[in-house]
Image (cartoon, rainbow, N blue to C red; front, side, top):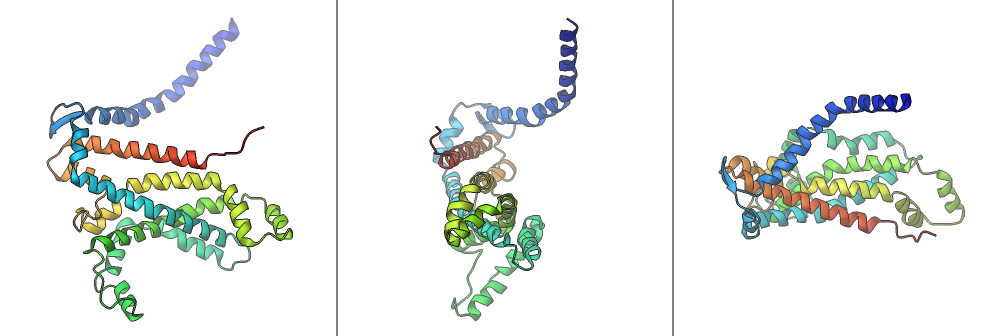
Length: 298
């Protein structure tokens, strides 16, 4: 009896400790999620809203600007994430070499972009890729191009600049995860493979990649989420227009414009936001499915 009373008191004390955290979690996380889901079924402008059922979803399927933004977002995702993950992995393997001089300097240089001010680096990129910027001058100096490229005036090259910018910014961030994982691998495994005559590429393919599989999956998922929510770079490069001709407009920027720049349409923008949630959930599930352990358990 006394033990049961003590257990109950401990349970009450435990719940009392976590109650503030649960209240804050519910207030600032769960409530906005539920409210945005409810808003996604509302139609109207400003605060004059009414229940519209699936009207917003039907509207999305016919919204050419939304479909353009969805296509651009997938373009950035399909091209940029594999490039960034591959570069991060190669940099990590190279900078994990104990015989490499100035490893600390190289690691710092590659990691620095992700802690650099967004405004500062956006301004730098805009000046570098201006028509008379250093990039055009360098390419013309080596005769790679005959005339300056309008990086921010051409739909194709504008996408290229965005991909270069986010790859430059986040490669070092992902590299840190791989470096940490590589330093936890027992070096005797590589020594044994080296003694057995396994070449370097085979050690990388059949030892390093399988042992880094959980980390690769983790970085792929967070990079997918980050790319599908791409907003900052596009907003700063194009002054929030997603230009030229909506060629760099992303889902997040379109949702921002729907909410704060155009006539406020909170219900419609909430519906578009849930598209990102659903796409992230589907892609994350597929990535877990592809990366799952297929070994048959005895």
